[in-house]
Length: 323
Image (cartoon, rainbow, N blue to C red; front, side):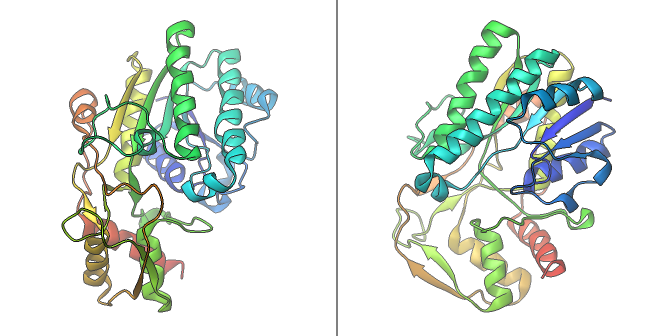
């Protein structure tokens, strides 16, 4: 089993991946500056509160811990915020990542799994989306992830730096047994917002009901965070076994509309979620669904928790436990 550094491991997806890495028998060290993560999501013994821009501290840590591979989550993720403060996203998502890459190259750690995004595709020409769709980001968040992806392509070519880029869609759900779930502040993701509406009675806003979809609301590929975490383990083990760099979509391959999510929450909670209807959000594609067949064929991963009601039920249990 390997020694793996997880950046952003106190965040939503990072904390779940840390949990499943340890279940798989790997040794994990988490680096997180806790600006948007939660210390209690990580065992204190493996948490190092370091800013990724501090290259020297990263170098020291990688040498001391004999790190063999890195899974890189640490990033800001709000599309809306990125359009208000683009410079924040380029400083954090790109600048800090360059510092991480410099530390890895200095210490000879040349295996990385990168947490990328479907936002790299922008508004795709076809759905489901395959990995050969061109880069076409329509916001600074997506652009920041594309910039890192392009760096990884050049590092692979000239520095023998092997990376798996995982582009995923709507991560959701929770792993209640581990005490882990979604805790963004502010929360921007649909399922926790609907669950909060059920808990508080304050309506959630649905952005647009006039899209060219069967029920007029946006369709997205909702993937359980635990399935997503396991995809990262398949990816890092591929690299540790000498595998080549590659890029994969991670999703279920099945889209669900906003109205279908509302209906699922009603089934799971037994309560009708209150909601209001607002205008479309700028840049929201009508449908984003992943074709994940490449990941399933090449690495053998498949989603085990793809049912929407399972995703909502796990998220609801976490929300009720942390009410």
